[in-house]
Length: 175
Image 1 (cartoon, helix red, strand yellow):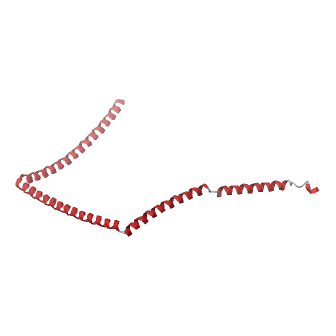
Image 2: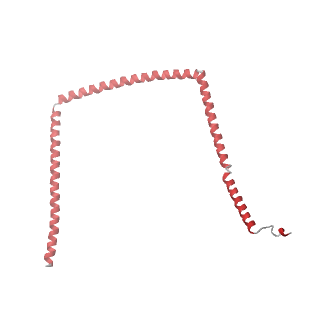
Image 3: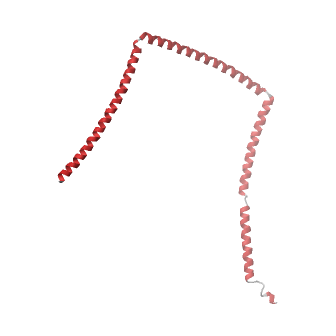
């Protein structure tokens, strides 16, 4: 009985393994079919390309035309580049001329001097305000003052309480 049960379980395991192998084979068949279709399409495309490459005269003519187009584009780009360089040169000369005129103008010179003075004064104001803030932080006495007032108030209250409990002048009142 035990032999038949173990044989049955071994056969069940073997059956499961075989089913998995069958599934893998079926999946492999599907993959192969897909790859075959892709390869067939690629072969058809290559055959069409080969037909195009067979006509050498047509290929040479197309390449000559493409070369001429590219040369024309290159010449156009070079001429535009030369034009832009010339334009930049003209604008640079105009800029230098205006810069020279500005440097010679007394109002512009005065404005530059005033601007330098304002910058100097701004830096002085900043330094002074920073100094004032630093000194203000060093001399911040309000918290200490408040603490002193609270301590004095506490001492006064304690003194009043002690005096109220035992009067100091009670012995002198008899005289």
